[in-house]
Amino acid sequence: MVLHSLPAWLTGRDTASVRGLVLLTFYRLFRFQSNCGNLTEVGFGVRFLLFQTMNVASGGITVFSSPEQLHEALLSTGYIADSVSVITLYVATKLRKPLLLEGPAGSGKTQLAYALATAAGTKVERLQCYEGLDEDKAIGRFDQSLQQLCIQLKAQGAIPDWHSLQRELHGREFFIAGPLLRALEYQNPCVLLIDELDKVGPEFEAMLLELLSAWQLTVPKLGTIQAQGIPIVVITSNEERRIGDPLRRRSLYLRIEHPTLEREAEIIARQAADSTPEFHASIAGLAKALRGWSLEKPPSISEVLDLAQALKVLGAERIAPEMRDALLPLLAKTEADRRKLLLRDGFEILVCGAQQYSSQLLAERTAR
Image (cartoon, rainbow, N blue to C red):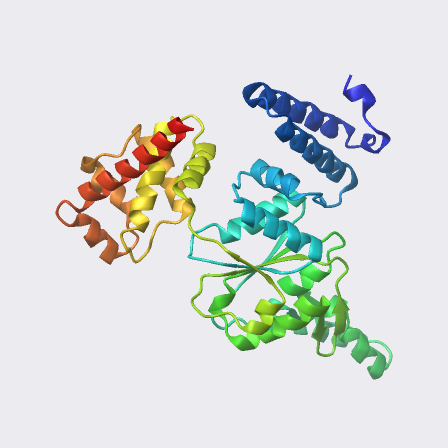
């Protein structure tokens, strides 16, 4: 009955895939309803289904109608965001404001940009910042070899019009675009990820201001390129250097810390769904204990997930003190941290602290 009542915009060459999406999503929604009985959540899921289906049919990006819909869309990608992050992200997409994410390395800032792009049905243009990054690598440059070839070919014929040739050589077809320029040329807006901006200097930030204020880039000899679709800009910083105030004024600010004990257990549960809640809580507890040890390199979320997968490979459902040597390559990523965990009774104390955290989490869940 659902398939016979599909609206007209679902017909066409993608009808089969769209109908499969409809069946699969409604099946999941009704399973979810039977498990929790929450009709409000089911309603959010239906709204997300409709936007996602329209996106498949039209080739455009999903326009989120509410923070709740954005939250559900992020969940569908496997990203668990808190309510403040969801609301800030929603406002940023509506106001077309850049979003500045600051926090420790490995806390999920970059992954949030990719999750947003997946949820919106668009692509990511990523500018990875590093010391020595310049405008040529960020915006683009003229292809001199192609220009030279064009000159040689023109010279073989009649005497060329050098003024016209100069204009031709400085056209877009001779320009190799970098991530910033490519982001402006998408017909359907992309997610522009400017990753680890703190690794470059203030002069590079100043170059970004035209892009973030007027949604355009001015390139010598090429001219000014206006955005065809205003990108969703996500800027990340690990706080190695303070980002300047001019860029902060143009952005919405969001602090991203390592996840809470409860949220990290939920993240692990999504990646290791075949394990027990006790297993999820024990891994989250160990992550919290490790981050409280003042390590040179605290574990990131992805490294915690690697640990959970490694334990599954080893057939272990719990972390024991005698597993220290086997787990050290996963837990310690510097020599100083390795030595700290090798101290007498050090790892045993760590495991004891992890067990206390996991017991606390399980007790709180039981009390609800």
